[in-house]
Length: 118
Image 1: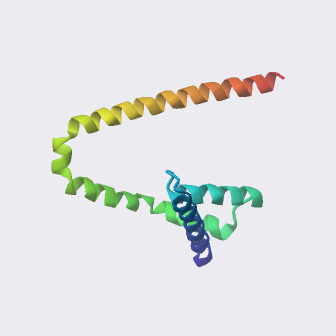
Image 2: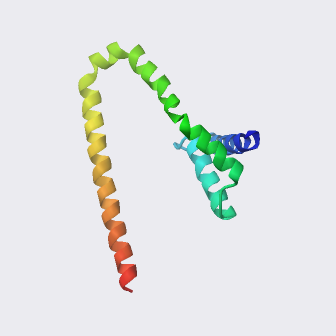
């Protein structure tokens, strides 16, 4: 497990270094995850130790929402004061995400249906 955690943390560190070093607007852990994905694709599989450790972490993933819940409770008065802009932002971003997802899915479906016919 220690080896697998080390792998995960090294990829996160590399991603963070790239993100900060190049001044990218993408979080370091996201870059690290993409690099890890690329490494696993090149390796053509996930080592069993990494799979077991990742599965163990994911079973306790709900604990990651505790800080967010505490933050909401701490800033409840601010949420009460700014509920309208927050609600508008949430609704608009949700609608934009659904629309963008639909457009991408439609494009992909057309693209793959053309490949199947050829």
